[in-house]
Amino acid sequence: MIKLLLTSNGVANQSIYNALVGLLSKPIAECKALFIPTAIYPFPNGAYYAWQAMFGNKKSALADLGWKSVGVLELTALQSIERSIWAPSVEEADALLVWGGDPLYLSYWMQQSGLADLLLSSSRHLVYVGVSAGSMAATHIIGETYSNLTNASHNTLASEDMVFDTPQGQISRTFVTAYGAGLVDFSIIPHLYGVEHPDTSETNAKIWASKIPAPTYAIDDQSALKVVNGVAEIVSEGNWKLFNV
Image (cartoon, rainbow, N blue to C red; front, top):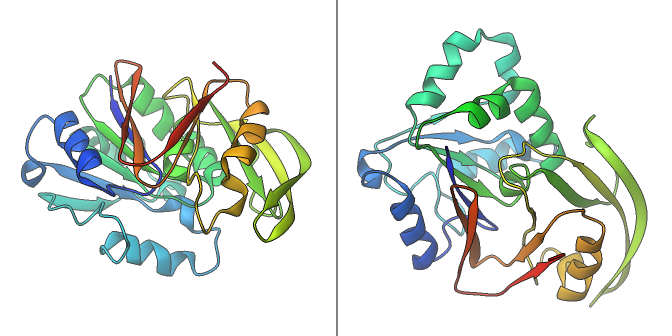
């Protein structure tokens, strides 16, 4: 069974780094990693942000942690490639580094590409490291807010218009629920109290979580969830909340 480290903002502190080292079966310098940038492409300048993340020009480390090797796995390409060609790369990897962006878009391509099925059936001790949308897409049910639904994928279950209070005033969002890859049985709201995410205050997170039919962790950028054998453990040097329990 795969192990998971589901973060809001990557390996942002020593506690999250230690958790990652503990999940791996050998030192990072001896581990192969595959970086998945797919979720970021629906955003303006997505290709630029994917490059920045792969080459370590972000606040928190991920691809630049000193891995033995790092490859790029683009999920939208996998349907056009024989499974026998790309699957061995996943099976040989020690870690999947799944970057953020649009969680619905990412979860759709995880399922369409066959990666989700491969991960669910894998008996290897692979470590799935999610960042923001990369963490959300690993769950069974995703809850996300959108200012528009241009990039919403075909696995949308429901949507409704909502208004959130923020320090800048009220903002309107469409709240969407959708199926994720189903690697864990809880949901995640990343970037709790995030300056760039004004709809993720604790008050708004509680409203958000009430729309999700699963236990839901709201985690800030200094927090993560470590999952081994289906059991989740909080790793945090910041703030987090658990709703719907």
